[in-house]
Length: 85
Image (cartoon, rainbow, N blue to C red; front, top):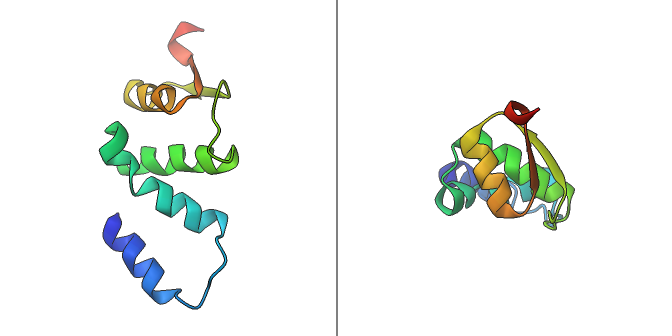
């Protein structure tokens, strides 16, 4: 993922605006090391963090994946497990 992010930055050097997609890529690149999530889970969590301006406190996240649920909880979201419904 880091190689992809680096290539993306190289090809778009003229673009100085931070788009939501670029923010998702930048945030997602650190999440596997930080929370132990897989690549697609990192993109999902990064998308949610961009959506809430990186202020996830008590925002709901409905989840059926234990690993992603733990990462989302560690990031500050309120996890609603499908298994507990």
